[in-house]
Image 1 (cartoon, rainbow over the protein chains, first blue to last red):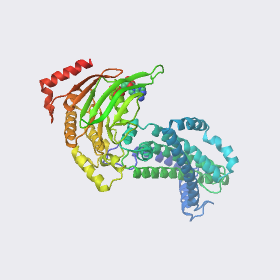
Image 2 (image 1 turned 45 degrees about the vertical axis):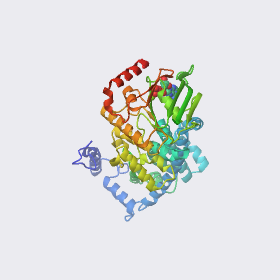
Image 3 (image 1 turned 90 degrees about the horizontal axis):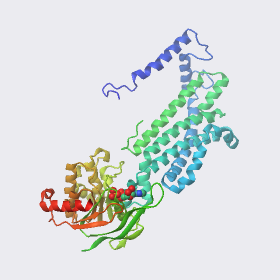
Image 4 (image 1 turned 90 degrees about the vertical axis):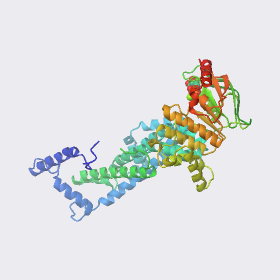
Length: 265
Length: 252
Ligand SMILES: Nc1ncnc2c1ncn2[C@@H]1O[C@H](COP(=O)(O)OP(=O)(O)O)[C@@H](O)[C@H]1O
Ligand SMILES: [Mg+2]
C-alpha cells in the first residue's frame, strides 16, 4: 500500500525498467547499432503510430486507418464475448444450482475444455471459412470456459442458509434466482467475465491472423508481408490498450450494478 | 391454550458420511408449543436440535411422525414461521433497510405500508439509525438484530430461533435476551428457541424441553414458574439455581 498523501497514478519504481529500455533502444538506434529493418527507431515508431491514428502524413499504407481496424476488431470481440457470456452464464447457473444439470453438462464441457482453443482453428476454418465467422467462433469458444467455470463455481458455493433465509421470507424459485442466486454469484461471475474478456482479445488476434481484410490482427500480419515492421508493435500496443479499456469498462459496469460489493483488482 | 405447533413421534435419520447404515438423529420426539408461548429446547451439542428446527421450518422432512403448524401439516418454508439462524445470514449486497424489507417486498404492499412497517420494527429492534448500513459495516450483535427484524416485520405466527445469541459476547448477548423478552411481550410472539445455555432457557422461556444425546428424544419437560416481566437479575434467585441444577443433572 502506498501512502495516501503523495500518491502518484503510477509507482515511480515501475517506470524505471520501461524508461531504461526506451533509453537504450534510442541510443542504439541513434548510433546505428541495430539494423533498421529489425528495430526501427522509437521516434519513427511514434511518428508512424501518430500517422496511423491521424493520417495526415501518409507514411504507410495504413495511414489514418486505426479507427477502422479498431472498430472491426472491437465488433468481433464484442460479438464473440456476448455469445460466450450468454451461454456461459446460462449453463453456469444451471450446472451450479441443479445437480442433474451438472451431471449432464459438466463432464462434456470439461472434455471440450481439454482441447486447447487453438486446436479448433482448422475445423473452424472448414466450417466457417477464413475470416469474420471463424474469428467470432474462436473468441466465443475460448471465452466461454472461464465464464462458465466461474459462474458455476460461484452459484454452487452459495451458502444453503442464504437460500433458506430467502425461502422462509416467502421467495419462490423465480424470486430466488433474481434476488439471491444471481446477486450472490455476481462476484465470481465478474471474475469469469473479466477472464473471458482477456481471452477474447487473445483469440481475436489468432482469428484475424488467418486472413481478414481489416482488424488489428490483420494489420499485424499484412505489415509483416509489406515490410512495415513499425506497424506490428503499434498494433500490439493498440490491442493491449483496447483489452485494458474493455476490462475497465466491465468493472465500471459491474460496480454500477452492485455498488456495495468489493470488486477491485 | 390454542396450539400452534404439534410434533408427535418424529423420527429422522441421515446417511452416514462414509456409507454404511443410516444414523438416527431424532427418535420419537414429541412436543407442543401453544400460542404466545416461548419454549426452549436444550440438549447436548450435535444431538439434533438444529435438525428438528429445520424440519419445523420446512427446509427438511422427517421420515416418520407428525409436524403440524396451526393444525395443518408443514409442507415447506413459509413466512408464517420466521427463522433466526445462529449466524445472521443477511444478504451482504443489501443494506439494512433492504434486508429488513426483503420479505415485505414479495407481498403486494404499498410503498408507504412497507416504509411504515420497516420503521416500526427498526425502532423496536434498536436499528432506527442503521438503515443505510451494509451488513459488513455492523457488529455481530447489530447483524443479529437485523436478522430478527427482517422476520418480525413479516409478523410471523411463530419464531424459530437456533442458538440465536450463541456467537455473541456476554454483554451483547444479555442485551439481545432482554430485547427478545421485551419484543415478545410487546407483540405477543410465539417462539421456539434452541439453546445450549441453560440460564438463557430459564430466563426467557415458559417451558423448557430437555433433549437427550444422539438420537435425540425429550427426556424432561419443565415449566418455568417465574413471573413476567422478567429481568436478568433473576439469575441470582435460589429457585432459579435449583432449576438450573435440575436441568444440568438431566443433561449429564
Ligand atoms: N445434512 C446432514 N447430513 C448428514 N448428517 C447430518 C446432516 N445434518 C446434521 N447431521 C448430523 O445430525 C446430527 C445432529 O446435528 P444438528 O441438528 O446440527 O445438532 P445440534 O444442532 O443439536 O448441535 C449430527 O450428528 C450431524 O452430524
Ligand atoms: Mg445446531
